[in-house]
Image (tube, rainbow, N blue to C red; front, side, top):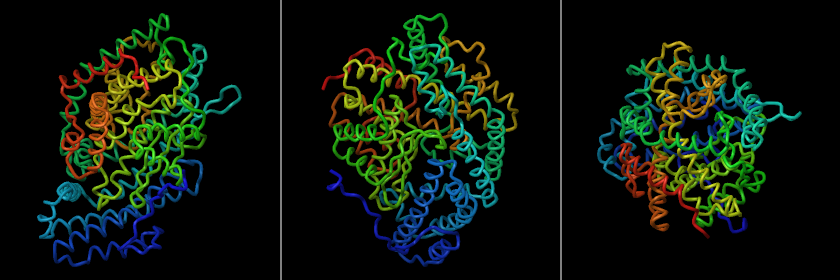
Length: 578
């Protein structure tokens, strides 16, 4: 099969030398100088200038991508860490002022107005003007410091392990024990994991405080009263406001938390226990052993390819190509950063999937999720400019979260027994009910944190608990575990590494439910709508892209109520047979 696989090649360079490599700022500067000094005397020349700039930025972006990938795959490898650090400290700060000058050069061109009428360029020009508006040279060293500090979170988390029966386990590997049907094992594992996290609670608290202060300075320097407002502008959130986020929080509290409460009550009854404790939340409520979707990284890869191929041959081809190119690192191991991601590699167009699989069903849905991102990259890789290929995050997460749901049609690849398939499907739907309140919790917490940058860690802890309680079920008993609850937020890497990148998961989760509903009604039409939306990359606004998928970009209580009613209906019905 691999013999017939069409492995993508990097497009022929027209501006850079074919042998070009990012070695140092000195090797990059001549290209920036050329773009800065070039005369633009026509619409065609402006279009060519954007193409050449995109080629340069794509090559640089891909180089940074590989440095980041290698550093996260091997956090204990000093050479990889140093190479990433070199880029952050010595190359990126030099690029920033040149990027601003290039933006201003484009903005001052008399031909820009004509270009902004062409497909996609209106979004590009809107973002370019936004970047000019928020750029401040004084912030360059602050961003360098912020990037250096955020790297510490990955190093601290990547080093966390516990001892279990004379074996050293990463926290990801240890979390599998929380699925054990023996409650004593679950409780012991929970305490070991929690104690290991709490060992670094003060270091992580200090790190977060420092990041908040640095980010607040960035915002004030750029003329904003807080970092939240700065990030809304920085992310190009033209299609919604902080108020829309607060409306989202209210809708989740009103329409989803009651379902969460019902599920927790049902779980307590099914487990036949007096108190539902945090270590009782992941185990199968009927006392069955944990679902095992695959056996090792190779098996996970092969089954994922089969599942995607059954959905659509093109989707399977995407994963096959990534596998053939060595763009999959799926298994958990010591020294590997936590989490999972799909990293777009702008020049070659074939992304890289990183994750920490052990053997759980959640690991299987993670590759469905990251695979959705990957498909998005494949669908946009031939668009003319790098800017066109980079969709807003609310669309990027729509790609991944929808794939988790529409791929369920072929999960028999992972679960041959009908009962297991039914269980897997139910766990996935319950996960949606748990995800939406957690997204609202993290997002509301971030709004509060950056509106109060001078508050003490103690005040932060108190407000975390207030917000957590708003979106948590009242069934779970946290008595004696107050400290664990106080610092639950520290496990959310987004708070440290990508602030305000989290509400997108909630918005996209709602969109994914709507796409899945369309798919259930008409498979071909639903899938075509999904793929058509993804092909738009960053050529349209968020509401326009959602409309292309046949869904709404809407956070209102009535709409969320409608989607939750659909999910409830699906939870009550058996999986479709094959």
